Length: 355
Image (cartoon, rainbow, N blue to C red; front, side):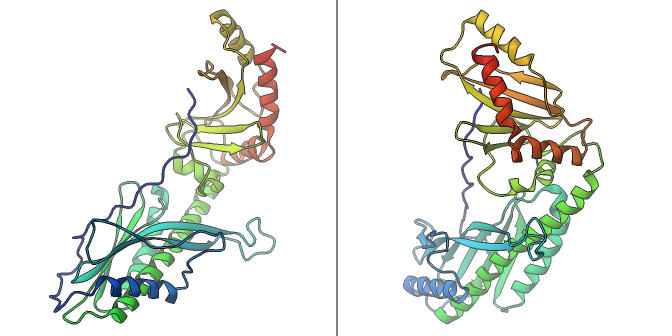
């Protein structure tokens, strides 16, 4: 059965105790209200307005059961230039990438701690990304002698920035504010550092793939070949081992593209008035698979209708004969030029009336 729904956003986990430096004994803890005031001030200092141009609320959400002295979650918005965005004749002229990444700030009474998770980075982008992250970390650690940070790669390929400021014997809201500002400012810059490094890596990778037979395409390579898929809202759950994406092509059609590593399947759906019996199903599948496999597809694949009477049919493309340029041309025809709508019309005629 075909499945299509957006995956849930991974939660940002945070636990006290990720200390980078031994805590200095504090004569008294920074009160919760003072810590919250310092964080609000730091956000103002770094131009984080309460409402973005898109109307999103950047209100702090208190995190219960983390620290009685205050723990808060904020989605930090980063707007990053795309390569060529300053070139008036570029396809990306004036375009930006926009990221909202969860951050947690917590006060323990002897220090404040911070955790922030980046976007996911693919293996082929890692070397360039980690080089720029080394530079970003040096910048953050160089701002204040009592502020220390680390950047750690996560199992899913994202990076987590964690930071800590020790309060010392005389905790100060103004000191916390300035350190919080430095931390969240560099965290936002870190997202754009990663974005630019990923784009440059993908640019190099794309050039190497243009005239090369693809053969095997993992999820990272697929996104390199179709950079739009870095944006949220396209990836869905499905059966493709190397990624699944959905495209709203018309009011009647949300097409799905499934990457299974050696093949790409471009699926369209048709709702039947009633599910045929076994003989009717066999005849319908025979008609569907007899359709001409357009746009260089190697075959047509169909599956039985689901319980709602929806049947899915795919054009299947082998990566073995495909170069990167071939992939781009195929993707443009099917999705950008909406040729999958015409394929769906053929599927409907074959499925419903045998025509």
